[in-house]
Figure 1 (cartoon, helix red, strand yellow):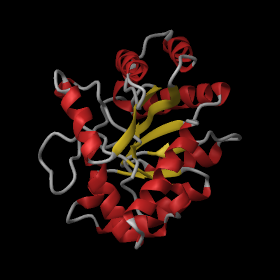
Figure 2 (figure 1 turned 90 degrees about the vertical axis):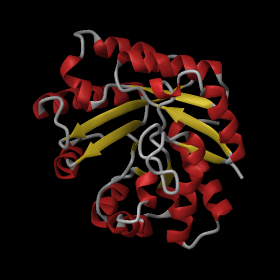
Figure 3 (figure 1 turned 45 degrees about the vertical axis):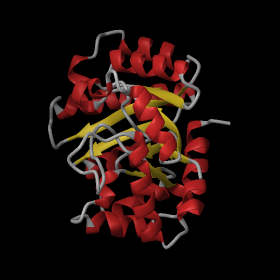
Length: 255
């Protein structure tokens, strides 16, 4: 079995000095691949370096909505350079976060739109972070003359919202939240998404799944997300692993 963690933050300081152990546990859990997105320019450079050091890691570069208020004037030029580097497969993570509102909402929207246009220009898929902002995000995406390919990462919306994104052509990625005991909305969403549009992720070091909840998350624990998703979809775990891994390779352009 080969599992692909479609979204993890291995550059996070909580992994410092422990990556070799993390990689070993990935093998134990049959998680063979992962992609690490950036959240700002420095983190994007860090994950690119990681991807260029390890053949089972790929990277994305982008500015998270939390960091939108602090982008330098030339940030798009820097991102353009990064997107041209080997093993950089996507632009992200970008989007809207109305839960924390660490950047003004108009700034979040502006920086997201600028990066999305860069994704279209460079023909890269987009990794979207959306928290408490599905209405505005859906309206924005509908307004676009041209939409990029992309992933709704760490999906937390309703079944109806999932259908909207799938109809727009996006992939939906589930994290450890899917395994939580009080997540019936996510369970219902998972049931209505076609297997060919599903991805699994950890978003580690955040959102450790049951039975590891409350600890540092890591890519190996993608297996728990996969097993829960397989149960909800009434699919064989190995079959769903093959499907979600192929989906990740397809959207990220990995041969």
